[in-house]
Image (cartoon, rainbow, N blue to C red; front, side, top):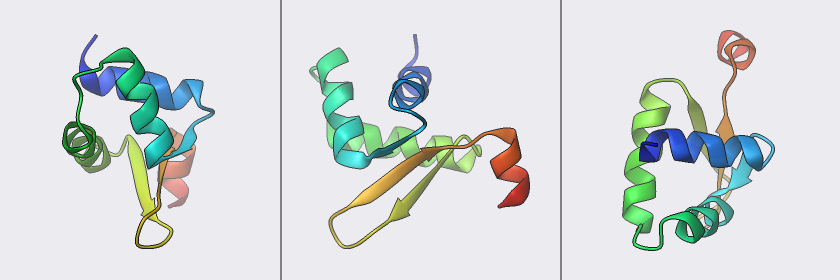
Length: 75
């Protein structure tokens, strides 16, 4: 499974929405050698392709949300 598909699968398992730190912790459990930089690059590509949305809550906290076809049309 590709890293991109793995991140999407993790988000589905987390209910479609997760804090960046939580997603990173889950990714580290499956791929111990993964870095935060790896995750951020994957999320940037997924966001460009309309699969996820990353929102900043404050300077330190980000929320990653899995997008469905319905949420993409209404956004």
